[in-house]
Image (cartoon, rainbow, N blue to C red):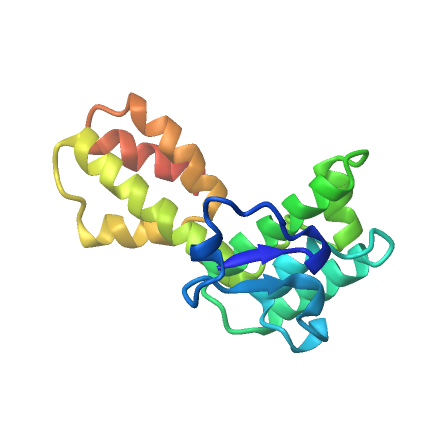
Length: 180
């Protein structure tokens, strides 16, 4: 599959690959011929965003992000798509910072979607418990795990640094008492 912004950008010098390119195994896609953006899958719209008119790009990007929030995507895919859209915008608007791009798109990363926040908290919990198990050289009790799983992401991040100084389980218990 070869993706072109338009037919006019297709290469005309195809030697020595002419037989392959003209065969049935290669398919060409022209982004400007895909039709109505609203009817395309969100992943395809992200590709089309690269060729939209700069005056239309912010509106198209905001619409894409809104569609991304509405569709049932795994949190990782949703976050990846938002990163892709942001990166495309940074590339298209080189005079703007990433923060300005996010503001233009209406993205407030202090208020991430709950699913993304929960996924990050879960990943942080798994990582911190693995680090603690290794650092303390013992498995954590279910009671301790339940205390840790209830911690917000920012506290888990603080704990991931503090645990480097722990020598035993009482250090962890003291830290949790001080930071809960």
